[in-house]
Image 1 (cartoon, rainbow, N blue to C red):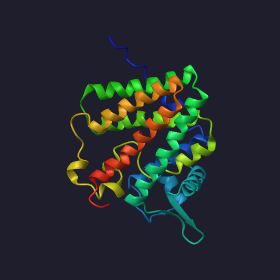
Image 2: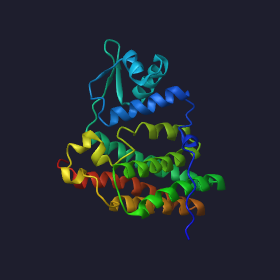
Image 3: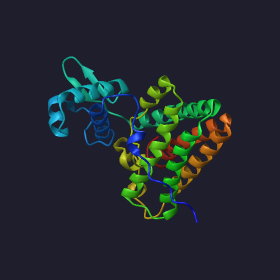
Amino acid sequence: MKKKAEPLDHAALADPQHTEPATHTVLVRLREMIVTGQIAPGTRLRAEGLADELEVSRTPVRSALAVLSAEGLVMYSVNRGYTVRGVTIGDVLDSIEVRARLESLACRLCADHGLDEAVLDRLSRIVAQAREIVDRGDWSEQIEFDWYNLNWAFHRSIYHVGHNSVLRNAVRMTLIYPVFGDVVRVCPSVAMHVPQRARQVPKVTPEHIIKSQAEHEQLIEAMRKGDAESAEKIMFEHVIATKRRVHSLATVR
């Protein structure tokens, strides 16, 4: 009988960029609200109003806005303060391409340097939990969220254990679209160009999820063997597949 994967401590997988806990929480929430369209492009972001809405002080909000400005999700001007930048489908596709290059480099670095057993065990547990979800066969909006949450934990773990802060910060600059769901459904700038039938949540595990899950498992095996070339290639094809899928579904090119 297959051993059930042990639950992960997701707190331990939090972004180790050493931001204050309150700032990190606000940053994650604001980023999610922007990339999912809950805060529309062009919206002025006032620290006072956001602090009241998120029930925090103004300090973490101001810090989070500064980070989002550096990431390119918001713009700052002396006269208007912070405003949400509009993101096009072209921006999203470009960001996926850059992310594919960066994450494939991260995999090469990890395989070249070697991963200790603790890191490999953590990655394996993430992938095992995701495999349990895929093997159940059923699908829903909540199941999609659960799988993508593990998917992001897997990707984030790889480029964090590479101990390359320049690469890590560069990856963060590409995150101008939601990572906790299917980009063709939950990213407004993409969804508007995709037929409604392609944005419906299926009742069974989607083929692109099954393929993605298998690629995660191949990546772990390549890194376990120290096969840097294979790890780099697998990760590039893995990430760029999202761009190709959007291209295949979008009604504009």
